[in-house]
Amino acid sequence: MSNNQELIFKIKADFLKSLAHPIRLEIIEYLKNKEASVGAMVKGLGVEQSGLSKHLAVLRQAGILISRQEKATVYYSVRDKDIFHILRPIAEILRKKLSETNEMLAHLGKP
View 1 (cartoon, one colour):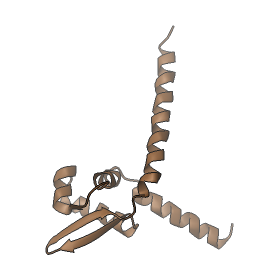
View 2 (tube, rainbow, N blue to C red):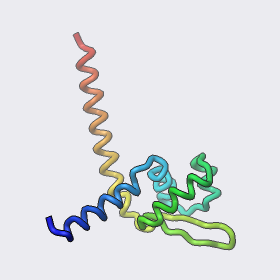
View 3 (spheres, rainbow, N blue to C red):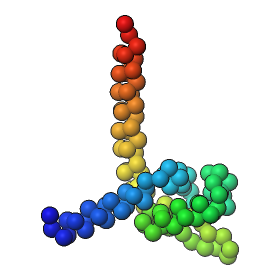
């Protein structure tokens, strides 16, 4: 494998790692169709500000979120709605997997 290919896989893996946390996925979903302040997200998501700030920084560094400051308030929004083209298929794969598991469990219960 060439160094360029290795670098591309590393970049992709780092991007996916930035998504690999339940709260980060919840933040992205929360911001799907709106911009929100840190304070609004603390209330809306029920998370502590210190933890939220760390997750927001990871998502911003990955280029998933953008922020803007208005006086003392920082607002976040999704930079590129194409992120949902990644998340939707994952949800669909998980739905299929759950459905298959439920079917298998139903068959196990039959005499």
